[in-house]
Image (cartoon, rainbow, N blue to C red):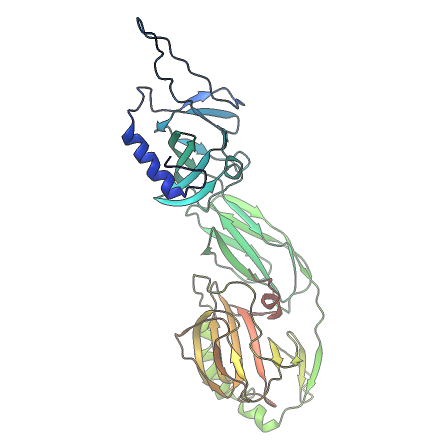
Length: 409
């Protein structure tokens, strides 16, 4: 036997070709014929004894019954040119046969292999014309199966605290333009991400809690996905900084001009591929002295600022590690933030590292999760050795704890 139930899909395809060469094809039509709706067993075929002969002619192989919604089709053995179509995610193909092995191929690549039960729950990553291969005992079947499913758009969760990120997915858009409207003053971009498209939608820490509309248009189809921005408490901090430090950094026109020239243009950039996998790592070890979103009053200034990341009070020259795999967008010294690294992790998700004593990477480098990128210091607008660590979705800073808890993407 050239096929067992544990064959790979490639071996399955090879055996189908060998089987076709080793035997003569029956003279029956290669097209599939409709069977009665709801039929679960293929119609039996019988042959009449040949005139003057004492033996019966070879019995034709039974047809493979494939049901899609209310319509059932009988697929003859061998290669069929009859194309079946799947247009409803609630009516996926069901194969009526005893323990067949089934595979789907798209442009020669196997995208599915499993049982009829698994096929009946399978939705491919994209629409298109697939080659369906099946094997029941000695009999092989080969027929085209077209998936033409309607667009799907969904949120991973319909509620998130202010300062967090909503993840939006879409698939089966088939080249349609996707546009997103929300009450967050941010226009997310969709990027290919495995078997779907993904867009990150940040909720600014200044957003008022409440219900917000989210409308996604895929061509002429409109999806309404309301969500909740849940309330979150932020700590208040009164900070005293040497006035000369303020004047040289946060209060310096030159320092702010340098930032605007070198850093602001990087924020809208987004790499189209996701570099990271799984939860992010803490980039340094030490107590947290300032939390994300903190409302900070500096030197009794009545107008507070907001803290876009977390401050980690690590020891001077302690190693700083990449929180996740990514591309180095910026690595250099800035008057405002000292030795600084910005990593792009894909889809517009970035991590930021400030106030370091030195750097181990350069712009354009690719880094792996846990790779050392610098050393803890107190350069720029800083009162002592620590690492300021932040995350953003493009220009919006978001809660850095979320991906370290395994909740990002």
